[in-house]
Length: 314
Image (cartoon, rainbow, N blue to C red):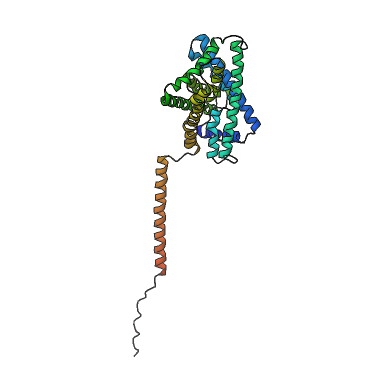
């Protein structure tokens, strides 16, 4: 597993953000659609495993398979572009503007939503046998998740909204760490191992991921969850998107870029450099003084002793 040093993988982060902004609309939408669909399948898989085993940790251990697959295939999640694209803007890469950044975010959002909703519809068919019977145990659980994570927050008002937002911040702190961690290695195994850990953490801790929720909540609405589309948007998706943006950009993108992309000289190095500059200044001052003294000596008039008058001859 070849390790890539922080200054090098931060450069790769900026390069990746630059490439995503310049990508065509068609490619951006396709890659985002597939990312949303694969992550939704992973979420469905994790919920199924949890229901069947009764152990949430097993579902969390297996969920990162979806994230690893979509990353290795070069697909894009909104949570990832939240972190990478602004770095290309800060680095003043050619063709990257605020408008192009928002364009990328909007296209990725739409693609992720389309992929996640597609899988939600497919899973709805599966867990109800084509909507011919009541949802099975997995379907019932999907409905409960949507209800608990919308109406459940709304019951607490502002405190619930704050909790939702903080969970979204923490989520993309971990998810974006997974995105960056994959850049720390040049081997497939190294990338997967590095990604697996933070993704496992976010899923098991129940943090709020905007794309996973694009699957869970439409599924809940289809499968009898007692909440509305408005509940989903106001009490989950919108605050989650904002929290994901803050978490990924603040705690991952900007911190790494600031300390490894635009590294400042260490305090000790600054002290050494200042001492060297002071020493050079003293030496130059001494040379200047010596030069001035030499010039003064050359320019000074020569004083000769008077010649005594000649004695008269006899």
